[in-house]
Amino acid sequence: MAEFTSSSITIEAAPNEVMAVIADFARYPDWTGEVKEADVLKTDAQGRAEQVRLVMDAGAIKDDQTLGYTWTGDNEVSWTLVKSQMLRALDGSYILKPAGAGATEVTYQLTVDVKIPMLGMIKRKAEKVIIDRALAGLKKRVEEPK
View 1 (cartoon, rainbow, N blue to C red):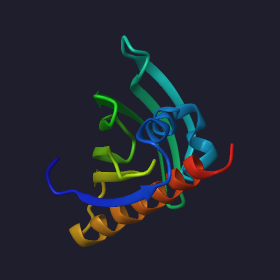
View 2 (cartoon, rainbow, N blue to C red):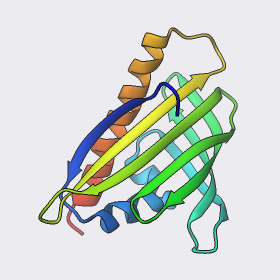
View 3 (spheres, helix red, strand yellow):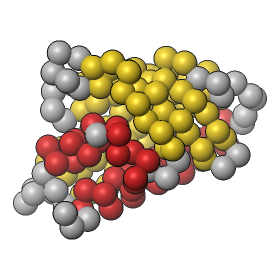
């Protein structure tokens, strides 16, 4: 990915538990806030999502987008934009690393390019807000009592 925004958080759960929540697209509307619908369109031989349609509502920005996913081992997933109404590009990834005693460091990287002109500084700030909300939602979802 070219110019991207990145942030990390530590979640009190093993990497496989964190990845299970990340890979459960059907439940995204329960914890992400911005995702109103998530439909897996295509899966790989291991049953992991390869293409997912997401209906987003982030206040001023509403979008119907399809993302293509690539899974690297059990601790990394990346995605790229297949199609969108509002975006020209969307590339991101979650990278999970064990952080001792049953914890996981999750790093989220994201770059977004919208079809309407936007200053780079404003775009980076928007990426940061998206990342911080996603990481906080993921942490809450993984760590909540079952």
